Image 1: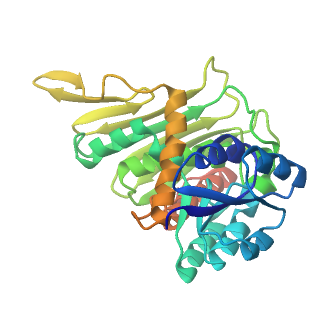
Image 2 (image 1 turned 30 degrees about the vertical axis):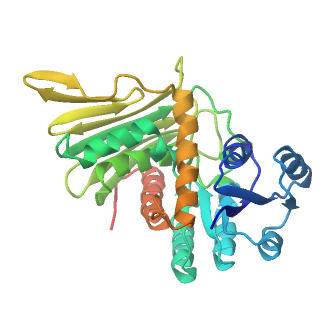
Image 3 (image 1 turned 90 degrees about the vertical axis):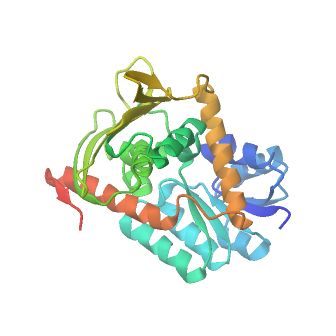
Length: 334
């Protein structure tokens, strides 16, 4: 396969600002078609990126075009139907996070992946940040010993996201499904996906009606380790705050900026590279690395990272978060 022939479904912010600009410059990719229910928007985007075919119906695109893979960047409520339709049509799929609105939708997608023997990757681009990959390599090398606590957060000054994110029927939830799922995935990945025992959560909606704008979550693992996550669209902070702290028996580490602290000869030494890229460049590189990884997996160069099965486990935790909020109690994971 010289080039992966792609169809992109959903032409909102992430497609226009991230997927299409990057994919159009990659030698391994050929964007054959785009699809969006808004034909006017679709026409503008197709012209801008010189894409030959435009559709307003996913099934029509799948039947008409000889595609190898489909990128799904629609609102979350349509992830399940679009992803399964693409899998049934024999296409590999990259679906933006979160994989679905809730656990049972994620299970349906994962079952379709197995049934149709295709590849599906969930867009967790933060695993592909250069600083995140460096930290993960240190953890895999047991440089920090046994990890017993991670703390991750993403606090934004205000919500300037797409309007559909605050509509529960479309998004499935608020800031936890938007930013929290990213921090959960990254911290969980850092810890090596330990089995979860209990979940406790508190949500607030100071600036939103249908969904939460702030979420505070505590997750206890069966091996005794702990994770806490705090995310907000409406925090009164001067600058957005994004971080992940990892605590091990032989050292500690943090992201943004990357620091890897370990005791050597009686002194605490930072083992991280002296110079790292700017946050803006790290963000761009994360998507470039993610999309290159997906294209490589489609071409059988390597296995998928961030699979449907991993996403199902994350969504089980997401469902527990919202159940804990509804009941006001800690939820035990079976």
